[in-house]
Image (cartoon, helix red, strand yellow):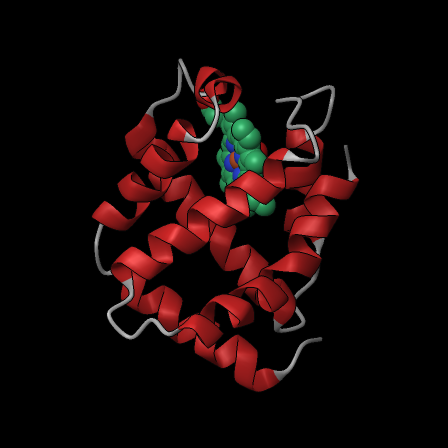
Length: 133
Ligand code: HEM
């Protein structure tokens, strides 16, 4: 489990970001603009649905940092691995960078330390998904 102050700060920041649907649109715009390979993987995706899936996925990452079971993350590891969406390990770095940019744009209380807290909180859960590759 991680530092409770980090997890709480991230949980609240996430709440502020989630108040705007535009947060998720902005994240995927940044994510897609960062790589043509990544953009191509979402060619047939219903994006409105995907915003909701990501909203839940992010919550699972944060809950994992609060000590929740890793079942959901292992499931995501299975769908994202080389036999699934084939999300190559380095793509998770781009994912995290895109997310931090979207947070900076949408959390009105953003400060640089918050980006470090987000990284500390999400990394163990991301490692589970990426580790399944
Ligand atoms: C740790 C970060 C990530 C989380 C929490 C996450 C979460 C999710 C969730 C909840 C779904 C829907 C459930 C499922 O299909 O299993 C999904 C689908 C998907 N994810 Fe991720 N994902 C992450 C990273 C990535 C990355 C880096 C890529 C790389 C391109 C990616 C590509 C996809 C694709 C292609 C789909 C399927 C879209 C479709 O249905 O057309 N994900 N993701």
